[in-house]
Image (spheres, rainbow, N blue to C red):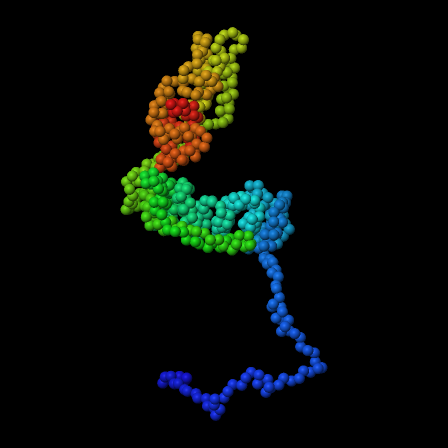
Length: 556
């Protein structure tokens, strides 16, 4: 075939021969035509190379153990697991994949000193290569007995050095997640998702399933963002003054609505809007680490449920993001609102009341207590009370009631200290001491007129110790009786639960059973206490000392 300017041209070749219909001779005939030359007796016989070669292939081979750099590292790590060094000088160390053989003698001495410090909870400044070397030990099973302990050590290392070495966020999040999959540890992945870029996909889905199934109070903004069509990171409010509040309250609002839905419909958000079946994902273990694959394998299969792909659930989470941001804008005095935020009226009312109460509580915490107790002055006050006691005690006078007078003086001081611990004191320590002394003196005079002191009906027989089990005045008794009568049965159970063992756990169960949150119940109870008693009875998540002495009124 040839090609020129006029186009393609084809040629035909014909092979001709005068011999036709020739038979193909048999293979043996070739040997007859071309006989082999006789063997030369003067030459050596050729070696049986072909036979030997066949024998080599047919021989049974013994598999030799494969030794890798990683397996050698793990073996050496086990040999050095207990090595310690006395205080040593820090020597810089930089290696891309650090191992023991990369260190000099001085670097080894520092490493084993530093590692012992870390194991005891102290984290001296060091180079990143030393940190990675210790991490390689932990992920290869060296330096711990239980997997949970190994995971804890990895997390502590991350927390201690991540501010200085940002590269830890790039690797440790994924390695800790791999560690949890390999050893089947049920650990929160929220911190890993928040700190590690590029891990928000499968890990966020796994964390969503865990939290929405059993622990909605552990939800985080980073995990929930996977389910939201609204990108809050582009909001001017969020990038400005609202970030801290949004990060704190948006997960709480979602948990609140989850409890509300469970109470109203008998099923939480996850069961009400079920996602599709799990997708099995292959996850390669400990990428870029010195890791011996003979320990846990090359990869693991992780079933991932795509919660974020549920359209109704995704729509609800998106609306809750926008609703919460609008409420926070209003509470923080921020101009402008997001438009077209549509949720059920009862949901919006619940979110509004919750955020208003949380903001008021946060403002009270920022203001701090009304009186800051000076421990030195308090000790001085206790010393001065002993002086008051000694002045009121007369030995061997035969006058009745003087010992009781001294006890009443101590009781007055105890009442002052109780009021001070409740942040209700507005006078100075000196004035308080003077009034306590004056009151004790006045009580002494009254006792002289009435030698036989009777225990009052509303006073404990042990009041001489300075602790009242019931209020001493009728006014206080009326206030506590009124307060107790205004409590709902659920609120009463919450107060009594806080007074017993495992109070917080019991309150969480009560709140979950009622479709609300413990914080909302605390706020409701404190509101009633402010109206009836003029003070809070729940400080943080604990009952005040005064409330503990008044539990009899609440039990009635």
